[in-house]
Length: 83
Image 1 (tube, rainbow, N blue to C red):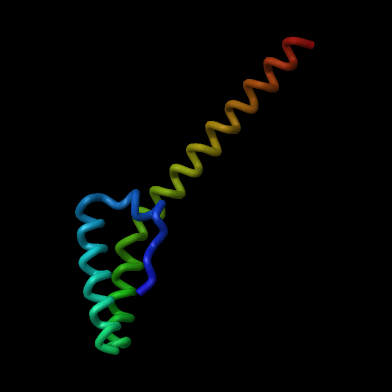
Image 2: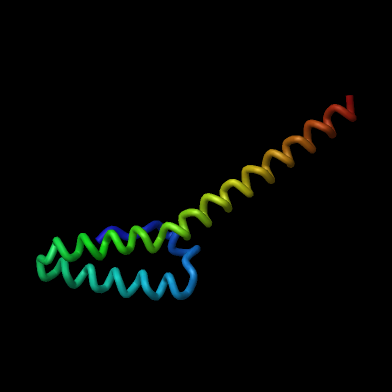
């Protein structure tokens, strides 16, 4: 079973995280029993479950980029005023 990144896991809601942990436990058990076809199905469910958290991470990145752009604009404006 492939785990998602720590950043994505940190943005899961409590319900999503509980479901994620349960699915990972089931998937690990299935792999230990060499039931890879069933583990694959569980992995696909995990992949779907984490999509909203991935979108939240992307939005945080976009917000940070916007804030950086605004900060750089304000610095440019200050430098132009000084000249």
